[in-house]
Image 1 (cartoon, rainbow, N blue to C red):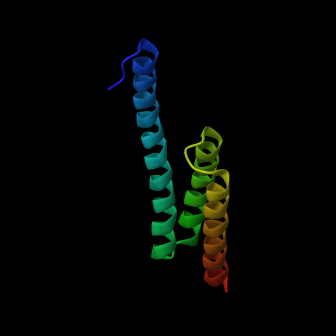
Image 2 (image 1 turned 180 degrees about the vertical axis):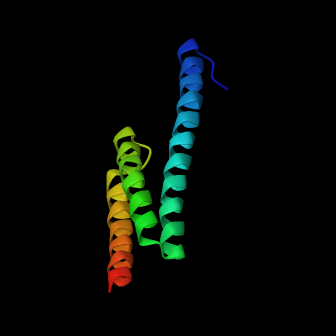
Length: 92
């Protein structure tokens, strides 16, 4: 257990920050899941719309340090490729 006043304050700050980060991470996962569900359903328009909503969420999470920048970039890239493949197959 923390003994000093500053250590106690740091503990409180860490707890608050953890809650905020959990909420942000959960929000990102929700947006990514919506894209994946749209891809699975085969609806190209819905998938593209969900992807356009998920992209800034991933970027925001990366800028806040919730996820690593490279992780966010990789997820965006892979989702974009899947959405593009879906839209190409839908039009062909």
